[in-house]
Image 1 (cartoon, rainbow, N blue to C red):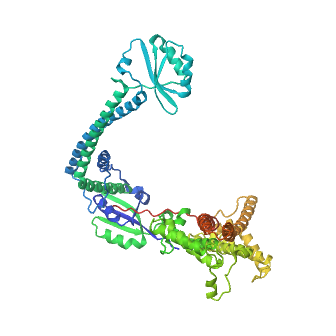
Image 2: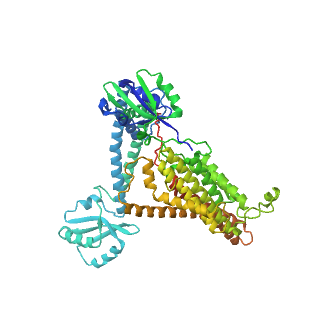
Image 3: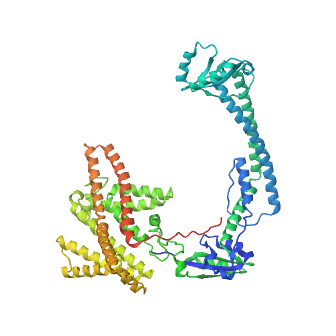
Amino acid sequence: MAVSQMKLVRTVGFLSKLNQFLATCCIDGFFEPDNAARHISPSLGFAPLTEDNPYSALIHKIDELAEISGITPERRRVRAGLVPDPQSEAWLLDMGERIASIHDERRDLAEQLSLCQNAMEQYNHFVGLDTPLESIFSCQYIKVRFGRLPKESASKLALYADNPYLLFIPCSESETDEYGAYFAPRHYADEADRIFASLFFERLWIPSAVGRPRDVLAHLDQNISILKEQISVLDKRSREIWNSETERLNAMYSQLCYLSELFELRRYAVVHGDSFFYTGWVPADRMRRFTRLIDGMDGVTFEAVDPDPDVEKDAPVRLKNIRLFRPFEYLVGMFGLPSSTDLDVTPFVAITYTLIFGMMFGDVGQGFVLLLAGLFAYFKMRSKMGAIIAYSGGAAMLGGLVYGSFFGYENKLDFIYHAIGLPEKPVHVMESINGLMLMGLAIGIVMVLCSMIINVITSFKNHRAGDALFGPNGFVGMVFYASAVVFAADFLGAPVPVSSSLYGTCALVSVILLFIHPILSKLIAKRKDWKPKNIGEFLMESFFEVFEYVLSYFSNTVSFLRVGAFVLVHGGMMLAVFAMAKDGNIVVIVLGNIFVIALETLFTSIQAMRLEFYEIFSRCYKGEGRAFAPVRLK
């Protein structure tokens, strides 16, 4: 259980060497910059470095050119970061003007194409009108309105059949509407508009044109083909210009991005005159490499120190575990990383999570399916959960060997037990209900005690001796919890190794110490405010706090009954599957196994994580750390 020790690197040098320093220490991804102003006194005259990034405009220009050409710039690794010379900038601007002129021409053509397509869409509705449009639009005494009318309203036009001043000519129809035009004398136009408005007529404005709608459509279709061809030619020219300079553009783009990222790192520095001060975090096990890189740099000096206690709590966290436990860092990170002064609980989580999952999901065959699925997800899909699923599947196989379950069959593994000298499988699930429940309680007791031990170690490490000794999750809490467990065992008739007077005395003393825990902790910390201001208020608060502690001990332990309960649930579900497959129907058995694997994997993993996060982490883990985020320049 290890958190990598971090060194705070403080660097001083000539401002002209700042870029070289940053480029050197940000190559391998083991340096995390920190705000230098936090680590230096303002009285020394250092001020934040404020500059405008000179590369962002050029990067934006290349992105703009690439977008115009419909191409994505390729980012490559930069081996030597050289500042672009004025000649390169002039070349880039010239190329931009060439592509931009093509883009402007293309934009005009695209606007014309959009107008033609919109006009074509409008005229398609009135193709049934067999009258030249110029004749309609040139009428002096007649008003015409083009639009659409809901079909249920169109049927009501019969009410106006006797009106000599109103004429509606249908042209086409859709599923819900009827398209057409109505005509009315100019002096009657307002009344006609009111009538059709009451029928929910929606007016459409069609562009002016000459000829019948079908002739206009043919002309528009011809124009659209010509415009599309012209746009295609311009796109081809734009791509040819880009492709002819692809290598140079990609190289410049990569170099500019590298220099821009490097320049952004300068914002962490503070400067005074021609000197800079820079700070960052480096893992202690990488300091030798860092020292080799920086030592040979003229005009730059640095020192690596252990952070002060006030700064250490803000230090980034880098977990350091063996490969076997490393996948479970993902689960720990879901709750929160440990602070730099806490213990890394990843190994504990790895062992307890797989143990709990294997007990709840005990089946050799189904566990093997999970193992294969996890390995596939981990190696082929690069899923972080893949390795955890694979571990869980392996644990489920071990649990299945204890329960004698193979894809729900209870007797298929008897040959294994006979081969090792056992008459039958160790545990008959449906006949061992009480034993499984007691197993769950025993697991809970052990894990709660282990979480308290972790809390004691963490508290001592963080100089909180009062919590380590007298806290509810400290040594006194452990004694009270153990005494309560022994009392419960004795009450249920189980043999206990100690007398009732001994565990009773331990429980009583523990309760008293828990009651005055706040006073004892302040005395150990040598705080002057150890005396309660109000005795009555202190007694009342302490009473309810101790009562809450006792309830939490009970509830946390009882929660582990779900371990045994899920073993029974798994056995019951497989009994139901075989009950549905009356004569051993293999299709039902296969589908039932698939359903059980999917459902129980989800439920069991959730319950195992719940036990970790709520019953264990609540006693020994806060998760207040922040991840180590080193910079790696490409």
